[in-house]
Image (cartoon, rainbow over all chains, first blue to last red; front, top):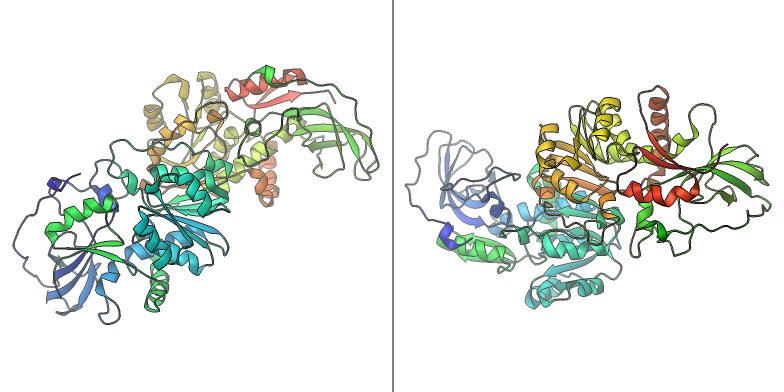
Length: 318
Length: 318
C-alpha cells in the first residue's frame, strides 16, 4: 500500500435537515483494523469500495444542530471517517464531557482501543495474580493498556515491541516487568528470559512469526485473546504458522474477538479505565499527525510500527 | 515409524502382594494420542522412554486378588498398556458390568473416545439446533460419536473421512447428513457443497491441510474443539497453517482439550452415551486385531487411516 492509493476529494459542506447535526471533526483515530477493510474478500466487516470515504472513529464539535438532542458546541464521539465534517441523525453519536481529560483520550485509552484491551484481557484472558501476560505491539494503543491492566491484576507483564526506545518506554514509563525488542533478533531466547515461568496469557495483536514464537512457550491452559494481525495486513503471502500443535499440547483456548460485539461490557470497562486514567495509574501516549492530508502517510507508517503510542490525526482546533 | 520400532519382551507373570490384584487383559485400546507419547519434547503427558511398556487403556478380568475390593472374575477397565497381564493396587481400576453390552465398548463408545466426543462437542462446541457440525476422522472412534451426538442436538452433521466405503458408512449407517472423501480431491469444493450454510463447529481430530481447508468456511463465532492432530503425529515437518486469519475474521473460539482433565463431566457423559447406545441410536464399529504381536502393525495402520472404526487388539478370551 502506498500514499497513491489515497485521494483527497473536496466537496461542499452538507446542508443540515430537520433532526440532523453537523459536526466539525477535531481528531481522527487511525487503527490497524482499517487495513482489513481495504481488502477484497471475507472479513468481519463489509469491505469498502474504491472511492468510499475511509472509515474511522472521530471526535468533533457540533457546529450546527437541528436536533433537540444536541446543541452547538457539544463535543461528540462519532464514526465519521476520514473527513473534516460529518452529518448525522444523532444515532451513534455520543456526547462526551469536555473538562476532565484531553478529548483525544476518547479515541484511545477511554475509547475503542482501551476497551479492546479491557474486554480481551478480562473476558477471554481471565488473568490471575502471579500469571505471566505477554502482549505484542506493547507500546501501542491496545497493548499499552493490556500490560498496565495485567499489572493491576497482579500479573507479570511482558511486552513485545520494535526497538529499544519503545521497549524502554514500556518498562520505564508503563511499568511492565520486561519488554522484548523483536527487531533485535533472538526473539525466542529473549522471550524465554523475559517470561521464565512460561506464558499464561498471550494478548495477540500482530500474528505471524511473533505468534509462532510465543506458541511453544505457552503454559498448560493458556489463553489467547486474538485481537489483530497487524503483521499480516499488508503482505502478499500470509505467514504460515508452524507451531499450531501447541494448541493441543498445552490445551490452549484462543478466541478471536472484535470489541464492537461486546457492547454489554463497555460501561464497566469504561468506568474502570476512566478511574485508572484519572488517578494517573494508566499511562498513555499519542502520535498525532497534523492535517487530513497527512493521514495516509501516518496510516502506512503505523502499519509498519513507525508510530509510538496511539496514532491520531488532528483535523482542526476546537 | 515402523514395526521394527517395537519389541515384544517376555517376562514372568508378577507375584501378587497384599492389597494387589492381577488382571489378565482381554482387550487393548489403540488410540492416536499414543503416538505423541513416543516423541521427545513437550507434550501434555510425559514422554515414554525407550524400553518402557507402551501405554494404553485395557479391559481385563481379575485372575488373582489379595484386595478386598476385587474378586476373581471381576471385569475391570484399567490402563495397563500393551501387555497381557497387569498388577495393580486397585487405584484407577474401574469395575464394569458384564451383562449388558460387549466389553470392548468400554474402550470406545462408552469409554475415553466416546467421552472425548461428548465433552468436546458439548463443553466447547455448544451446539445449537440448525447449526452445521463438521468432524474429521468421521468414521473413527471419536468422530463417529461426535456426528451422531450432533444429530441428536438437531444439527447438520458433516463428516470428513478417507475413501468411499467409510463415507458411505458415515452417511448410511451413522446417519450423518453428508460425508466428504478427502482422498477424492477437491476437498474445498466438496466441503462447500456438504456445508452450504457454512460451518459453526469444527470438531478437529486431524489438523494439517484438512483443518486449513475448513478454516475459511467457518461462520462467525464458530467453535473448534481441538482433540487431535492425527495427520501430524507421524511427519517430519509439521504442516504450516495458512488460514490462521480466519480466527480473527470469524471471531472463532478454539480450545485444545484432553478428556482426562474433565473428569467432572464423565458421569453425565457416560450416562447419556450409555442410554443412546443401549437404545440403538448410537452406532459404533470396531476394527479388532488379534494378538499382542499384531498391535504395532494395527497401530501404524491406524495412524494412516487403515482402520475402520475404533481400533482394538484382542489379547485373550474371557
